[in-house]
Length: 425
Image 1 (tube, one colour):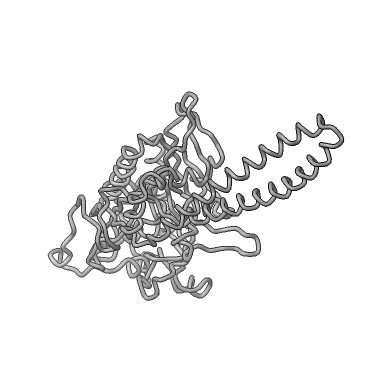
Image 2: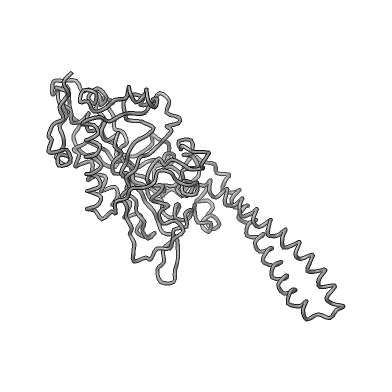
């Protein structure tokens, strides 16, 4: 959530942010009114409570004649205090309800617009010309089936559409990617983490995934647990309700977990293969930093993602994601999009988001420097979303006979294999 002081002092900035996101601008004024009522009802409760305490001190000292009158007044005050407390609680609940609907304040340099209004910041690598090499590129599913690596037909039989089995060398390839990603993250100073995938409502709400993203979240109603769509959620909630000493920062974690997404609103999109699925594994970087270090950390996360994709020898571009495609928690987000030959375009493989203090305020994660205690900043960055990375690897490193070249960074994790060979039919 945002700082309410910012809302009071500069409501026009909050309105502009909402407008840029394509979200409800009227929410700002509704929240201002609710905040004013919250504060006035709190003052009213404090005044009556103080009066009640003062009266309580007078009663033991009063004469019998005065006591009856004071007791009657005390009874009236008791009723008034209860009513004022109820009004205060109601006002606080309403203000919080509205505050939780408000997205993070977008960074002033973020391009304004929708999903297609991003700005390309950098381009890396060379896109292969398969026609010049004398063959037509196969898509990842055809390649994966030829390698005995991907089975979507049996997955559909077992679980339905948008599920998959990784088999044989496909399973080994996932393990190689995960181990290589964790190795890079550990070398960069991240603490590796295996995280829960079932979380309580507060963890999911605290990271901002029960607002506009709620339609893509799986909820187990009987137990009131949520299946996470990213290990960002348990990593953000790891230090929930804690105060971290400033000299311990930055804290960096690399979480590995299965992830679950409904993919609501994507009917008919990416239905072939494993690019857009309901369940996948991912390595996620997560940082806790002092607020003044957040922008620099954001750039560091992006550099680690670029290092990863460069090591995999994938052509990719870096984009500055537009305001309408940020997600509620992010103030700014950079995506790295890899070239997918058979689609003829770049597609998202990694994201790096600066959430400033938005998640920390919701989850009550604070830092202490001397006597000062304040919310810190959180950031997250995908290092390896496994199925999409496999898609990019297979298509970009394929050879004319259906085999796939293994980039050197992965070879130590694949028993030294330099080539993935098709299986005999």
